[in-house]
Image (cartoon, rainbow, N blue to C red; front, side, top):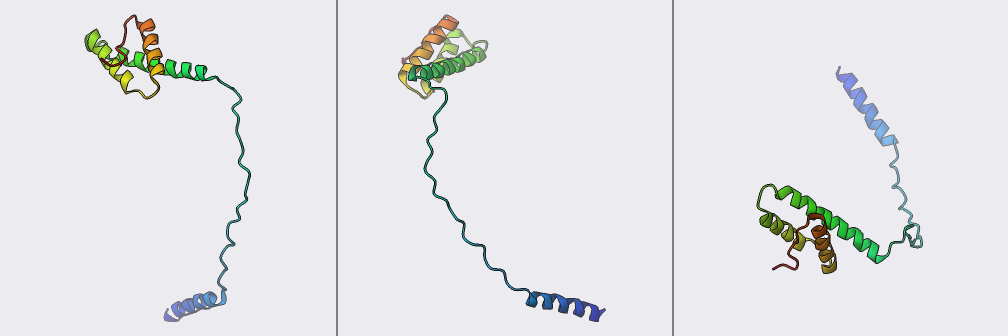
Amino acid sequence: MRNTYYGLHKTIEDSLKSNESRKAAPPVITVKEEPKTVFHSEHQSKNEVDETTVKMLCRNLVLRFDQVRDEMRIEEALQVVSDKLHEASGAVEIKLAAARMFREKNNVALCYPKQ
């Protein structure tokens, strides 16, 4: 049994000695490419993009109003939604337009700018 282990150990040792160490892979070749300009197929004007933003913000306000109006008085619910409007990022014009759209949909006005 000892001879078998020694023989196996010897053959592994011999095979390790006979193998040549492999060379490292060549460095990665980088190709310099010109920057590509990407054009959007749909050209939207600034007003259309703002209108989309206004609609999204108004939708968020309406959803929040729907969530809280059953749990509290209308005045408190409107204050929660007004606070959400003030916390939203974006231009003042977008916030004012969203407040107008909210008033048209719900027949109640939000306080903007903050009182």
